[in-house]
Length: 602
Image 1: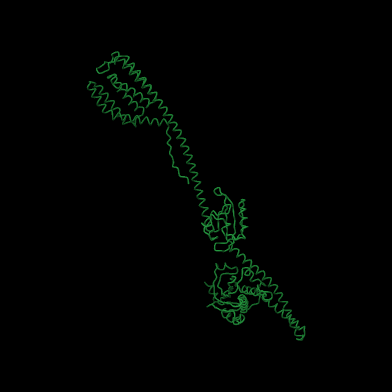
Image 2: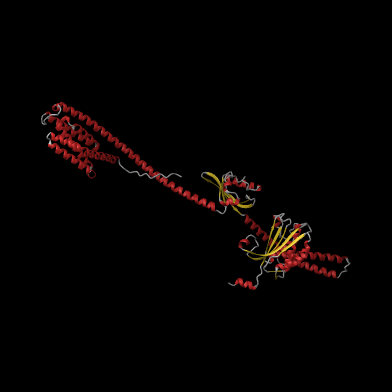
């Protein structure tokens, strides 16, 4: 920041005004000196004049002194020239009186010389010449008066008072000294005036320069204020932006980053500033070529994006970000501005929506095919049974008809599963207690699990009723328990739990099929081998199976999905390889007419 320069107030004073002020101070000082020092001189002069019986001189001294005092007291109210003339007149009269009464022995000539110099200094060269000429005339006149006896030569005067040569010499000396003094004082005044004019010109130039500098400083201060305001606004927007924003140099080294960047990477600002993004450890190896390509485009001055790239946070979590970059110059330095938005959740939601759409499309296709195929199977099964009734059981044709009937019945079962997946299976829903229904069906399923599997049932307390076909619950339990048994392999545990749960809008956003409301929860979990992400992505597709050929039709979980969706519920799966699997089935709570009227009534 440039330090503030204080305002310089330049007083516009002309050189002659400055010289006049100096003359005024000089004149006032002399008047004050005469008023103060003149009093003892007046007393001494009066005593001498009385001794010499010069009463006129006494009166003259008194009048001149009080005139000088009056000029001093009224100095500020009197014109300068008048005050100067009063002082010079007083000195002239005193000098002339001394010259007439004391000749060379007095101070008349010296006072004449002083008057001439003062006149030059106070009133200029012309006034000095005039006063000097007046003093010279007075000096010559006094000399002629003494030489020709017009003035008596009194005792105490020099013997040469009556000699013409002495007065001519005195006049010559006065002319020399007065001329030199006038010339010197005049030259000094001219030099002072020129110097003052030079100083005045320089002062004016300095004033103009100072005014221009002040304007420039004001403009610069305004620019700096705007720059600070702009920087503050940018910094505020930079810090509060919900997206991660960062600055790097052309080599990819971090210069700055906002709070969102710290949160996204899981690294503090102090840690990543100065580090290179390619070597910081946030990019997986398979993303390095893409990152280098983006940096190369920025070096060429090109903006990029939106581009999707994966990052690995400090805690090892992989996130997908949508990144935009823009190169620009900041403080004459090329930098790159990057904006990264975490789109991991959006990608997951898109994947779920796509999966739901795919399942819906497959369900519609499977439902249409299964419906037509089921009609044809009904004809095949009916005709096979009629033909078997008309053939001998020991006949080979009877055996062939039996194989046809078995295959048709198996196909009918698969068709029934397809219809369940497509939510077109005929159902007879009833209001039931899920705890009692599950407990009744588990008596059969325990025998199916075998002795190596520990089947644990944990019914919830005070669960809400549901409206559902009991046979569909049996199908759900049978398929999920068989899958769990196969995942456990030799020995393990399967846990079946029931309970109630209320889902709000925030929780419903976590699953594509979920919606707010009250649900009865049916959970089946195992401690088996678990499933990887690829298996989870295709888990509910018809005919998808991880088992060998002939071991599964791949319709079990597809049928479970269809049944749950047919009853306006949804299903979630939580599984990790080596840590087991948990299926959570959410069935909507059934409300009686009385409960519905209670909810609707205010």
